Each structure stands twice: as structure tokens, then as C-alpha cells.
Amino acid sequence: MHYLDIATWNRKQHFNFFNTFADPYFSVASAVDVTSAYAFAKKNEKSFFAVYLHACMTAINTIENFKYRIEEDKVVVYDTINVSPTILRPDKTFGFSFVHYNKELQVFENNLQKEKERVFNSDSLFPPQNSLDCIYCSALPWVNFTGHKEPVNGNKESVPKLAFAKVEKNNSKLSMQVSVSVNHALVDGYHVGLFFKEFQKILNQYK
Image 1 (cartoon, one colour):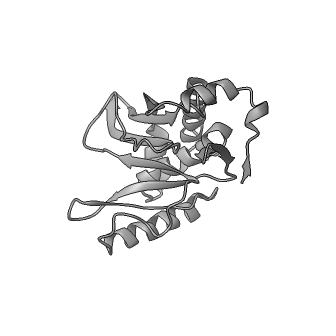
Image 2 (cartoon, one colour):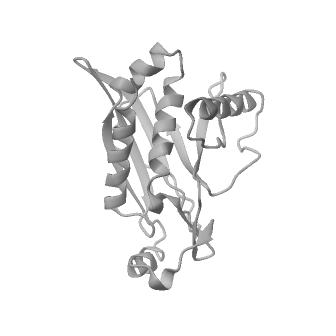
Image 3 (cartoon, one colour):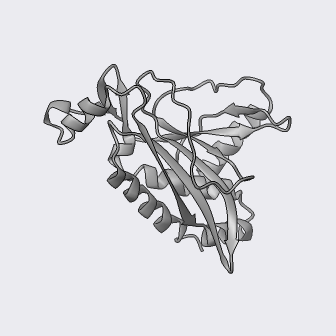
């Protein structure tokens, strides 16, 4: 990790402006085609959630602005972004988790499974590790939303928040709405567009 030089940043004015907002987050929801990723998961007996979450995190880690976090009015740039998904327990409560990203799908899937087991065997809401080098995300496979609002605590929060909706079938294609909420002091619509483009590219690579 390292600190961004705000003084020479071409987004200095944007950062200073939106960093004064009580809630600087904006959200975008868009559909991605998960036909290939879903077929790959079923064919290889893998968790579909693990497959698309790995694709998502691979995309996140290609876009620098998604690696920016605000800490004491400084901008930290993390080398690798991990993921903190909510995990539903059998009793229908959930726990937050912290899953270390790895370029290798199998390693990432193993990391996710270990966190799932930890949450299932705990009544704690929070994971042992709770740092900012992650994104927050949740899956809502019961509803096909076209918009989504995430809670913001107002304390210079800067971690991106994602939500994944129910998979919908349209003829032979499967699609899934994805909501992305980001701090406008760090991320613009252009960067969100880059994310969706890269996410779709990676999802299409599963065969």
C-alpha cells in the first residue's frame, strides 16, 4: 500500500468537493450475463457464488480507483482488494466475513469455504479481520432488483459496496442484476463503467 499524492491528483477538486458530503455515495445497478459462468459452475461442481464473486474481485483488482480508501483525509492505495461478503446462517441470521482474494479460483474458493464454516460456527457479527482493503457485498438471490440502497455510517466511509440479485432466465440466457455503490470522492461513473465491462469480460471467459 501507499498514499496517493492528492496535491497532484487530477481529481483533487472532485475529492475535496465530495469529501465534504455527509453521504458521498452514489449507486448504479446493471445486469450482467452469467450464462457461461453458471454453466461452468454446474459442470465443474463449483459454487456459482464463488465463481461469480471471484470474477467480480478479479475485475475490481484491475481498476485502481476501486483500490482507493480514505483514512484520516488521506487517500490510501491498496495493492490487493479482498472481499467481505455477508454469509447467511441456517437460522437466517448473517455474519460478515473477510475472504482473501487470490487469482486462482480454487484457492479463492477454499478461502471462501473456510470463512463460511467460521460464520456457521459462530454467532459473532464481525470477522476477526476487519480492515479497509476489501469491498463489502451481499447476495439477494430472492429478488430481482433494479435499484439498491446501501447503509452508510457517515464517518468518511469509502469501501465500495456491491449487491447481487436473483438470476433471471430469458430464453437461453441467464442474467443477474448487480448494484455498485461507491464514494464519489474516489470513484466516478467512468470507473464503474470500466468495472462492469471487465466483470462481463471475465464472466464470458468461463467455459
